[in-house]
Image 1 (spheres, rainbow, N blue to C red):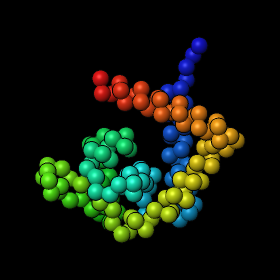
Image 2: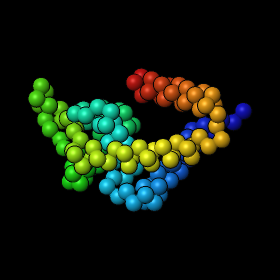
Image 3: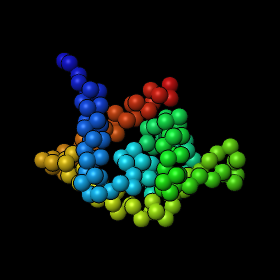
Length: 145
């Protein structure tokens, strides 16, 4: 049996990213892009986190994050501060501007969820997300090995 899971996941991610950008444009949201939205999402869950946490939760390499975070800081979306307990760490914080954008992000995310799960039952969604979590765990374990 031929498995296409990895290819399909990659293709879905690419299509989803493109569609997310299109929905942002349709709604006239230009304060952040899709990748920046993922970073903001993590900060909306917990503000004042180290860059490493953003890297782990967004699945982005720290080297990739550096330029994005600089741009977000220039745009007034985040601020960076040295950790008072460990000067080697930089903590990321939301600004008032980015706090005000949360509803916009949630509206786009809701629209995307409806597109992703169109025609799915609640039971199918629950099972599917369980499978995705298992795949994520498998990949995370492999990275740690």
